[in-house]
Length: 113
Image (cartoon, rainbow, N blue to C red; front, side):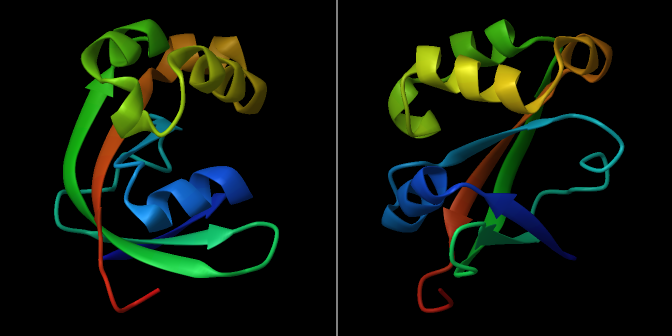
């Protein structure tokens, strides 16, 4: 299957460069249908550009802290402090506590950007 995800410009650029290999999302009903091997089309909100990536692995965590303890900052594409602020800005804490978070490990499909 193929799914579209929207990204701010900085995470989009980091995924395109290969520096960000883990995308973090709320593990709500919208993401529960994702499976290993699916294709994600990341669309940059500021300019509409797209990057295609394949899901290499999916890992769910009950809390953002648990996810942050499982990955190095380099794979997340930013410092853990910065990621925590961004995730908490996008998703209400009550939703994070209710659904948990999802680490989507990706591999960019070169030649399809």
